[in-house]
Amino acid sequence: MGALTKPRRSALIPPDAGGGWLMAVIVGALAFVACLSLAAAVGASRAADLWSDGLATAATVRVSAFDEGADARVQTALRLLGETPGVQRARALTREEVADLLKPWFGEGEDFDSLPAPRVIEVTLDPSSPPDPGVMQARLDGAQLQATYDGHDVWRGRAAAAARAVRLTAICTLAAVLAAMLAAIVSSVRGGMGAQRHVIAALRLSGAEDRFVAAIYQRRFLVLGGLGALIGVGLGMGVVVAFTRAAHLRGLAPGLEIPGWWPFAALGVVGAAALAAMFAARAAAFAALRRET
Image (cartoon, rainbow, N blue to C red; front, side):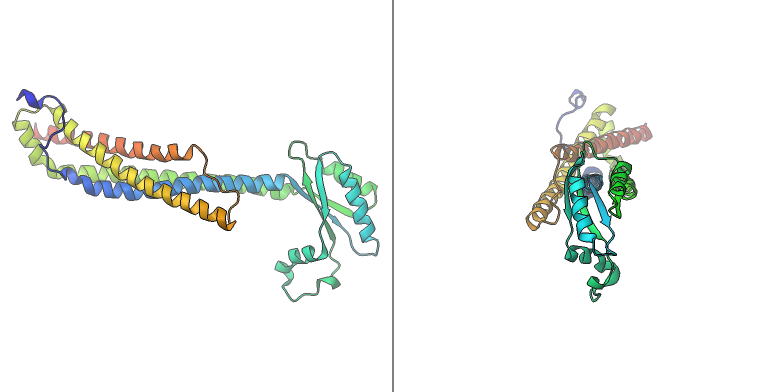
């Protein structure tokens, strides 16, 4: 009987004890979804940051075009902007570019040359020291250019709020998937262990200590849970890498990058699944042993 007092690799329990392989399949599927959710969270956070940062370094100047002096005022505004600290570049949009901006509101068939559309200057700001919008407007007013400076303050605030919402939604989605994976592990282990009562009773009658019996099951589920999660995460990482490369090749998402820490976070999902399976099996085994007492 003393041989059963130390945990060791053993064939004392059936190969599919406690529905272990079914749990591995469930864990693999959920780990795959968790990996994709993690990638989506990282990508959404990155996209939101790029969106917010892009607005933070952009501004526009609208010059009234109700009279013949619009072109001269545009040139004066460009010269004034070029002399302003904090402005990296200023460029006047062509009439075709302005028409492209108006098409979503007026449609394709509109004659934009007949519209008194303002002349638009695209301004790129220095992100480290952007000019004050009030000072910029005062300078334009002082030059009597009939121009309006738009620092996109309202849009920048909305972009920041949207970035926070996107990031929070992605994190909550990832947390929900991880919670579902852990719940599925615990549920499948408990359900499967219920069918192992006769095996546990036989081990108890053979003189096995409780910790030895629990160690057999927790080792089995540690391996199966980790294996299922590793396969699921591996497939998920493959999908993410393939999608990222395809997006870069097609120019669909130039800002989409996989951070260096992301594979370690994905492997953390594997560790969490394996440990959850191990502790769930241990708790279920001890519960079954208590019932046999």
